[in-house]
Structure formats: C-alpha cells, structure tokens
Image (cartoon, rainbow, N blue to C red; front, side, top):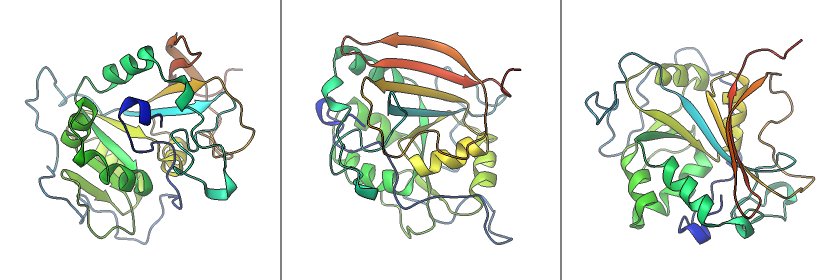
Length: 252
C-alpha cells in the first residue's frame, strides 16, 4: 500500500503465490495452530480498555487500496508485486496527503488484531519490528494470524499460524474472544474470505487511476452479493474513502 510517504515502508497490496480453497486432508483442523511466535496469546484478554468482546463475533475488516477498475496489485511500489508481468507498481503513491494520513491514524486508533497472507506477513515482519512510530507500535502490539502452509517459524512477536482448513479455522477465530481482525493487502487470501462470506466490512481507498490489468479485489468467481454503503469521504488528491458492508443477495 502507499507506504513510503507515510513511513509505512512495506507493501500492503498483494500476497503472491498463495490461494486457499479451504480444503485440506481430514484431521488438519485443530486450533490453535502449531506454529506460534514468542509472546503470542491464545486469545485476546477480555479486560482490554472499554471493550466487551464476550457477547459478539469478531469482525473481519478488509482495508484495501484499489484503482477505479478494482486493481489492488502493487499500490506501494514497483517491486511490491511484479508477478504476471505487472509493471504499474506504485500507482497509489502520488495521492498521499494529510487527509489520507488522518484516515490511517483513525484506522489504527482502536485495538485490533491482524489477519494476513504469507507474502504480506513476510513483508511486514521484515520491516515493522524495526520501526518506532504509531503504525509500528500498533502493528507490533497486535496478534498476527498468518495463513500459511510453508512458513515453519514466525519470528515477529505475537504471530500465530493458520495452516489447516483455512475457512474452518477463520470461522473459529471469528467466534473467539478478541478485537476486530484487520486484513491488509493479502489479495489471494481475500478471495477465499470473500468466497466464504467471512468479510464483515470493506474499507476501500480508491485512487483515481485505471490500470486495465492486475490482481483485482473482487476476482472472477466470487459470489454475487449486494453491498450497503456505510460511509464515504474524499481527499484533496481525489482518493475516495468508502466503507461497504455485505447486504445479502442481489436485489431483485
């Protein structure tokens, strides 16, 4: 995502070489996952400030930078995700301004955990533990749930692996005690979450560009669904900041 000018430094756009249909051999569905980093709690404590998580499901909130034509690949830079010959990386960077900075500050103001694909996790884990700013403090504090079948060790503190039946494990996670689950980037993981109707809210930062190619937020095969507009605002640079929530079947 648009990280350089925001001191974010690590891409948030896509999660390469990873797609999870939710199917694994019988028996691979037990929580908690086996791979756990140092200091990772089993669940978030129930006595966090001003939060009562005991009577509600955890929400999964997808925070995604997209173009007008729905592309989410490589918004932060040319090296973020050049897969499939993608050469337009960095398309979101020219539109960073104070309003967008404020939106990011608001996004990380409350307590949250993170749900990430493997590639996005690796980018984050190589950057955020070494930074000292409000974003880094929030990310480092959050529990990171990482969908991976290949990582044998998670070095970023408070990280846990989800390596079984992804859909089943995430449903269990939603039913556990804790704050909201934020999905940053992780395009392939998002396809699985959307397909299983596990995303409770989409926060879209729509840059005023059209690319005509690249990985899209809503890829081919996602179930047709209506969305309800919850909030919208714009930045001086032309970015639309829109919040949608699933609203059931298509209207007839």
